[in-house]
Image 1 (cartoon, helix red, strand yellow):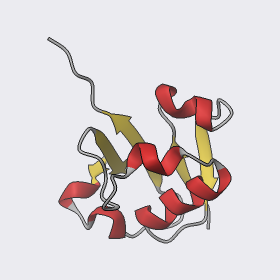
Image 2 (image 1 turned 180 degrees about the horizontal axis):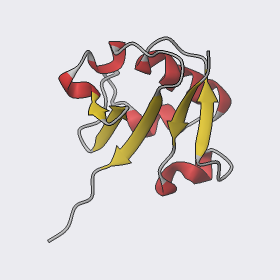
Image 3 (image 1 turned 135 degrees about the vertical axis):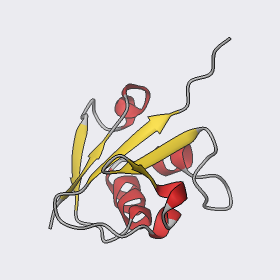
Length: 91
């Protein structure tokens, strides 16, 4: 049951410039682990040392912020799209 992960431009150097990656994970956390297995180094960009999503990274499942769901335990179903959005600082 593939799900799609949309990779933002700053992280595409880790995914061989792929923008859309298919994963077979059941949760967002499993999707991150699958990405790490295939693209070493991506997990440390997404998760802090405690394994939590970094505060400057936003992850959405079908346009819903996982912080308002079950975070990394947010369940995935066939056809879901995960979007990774780095926060933009400006002034």
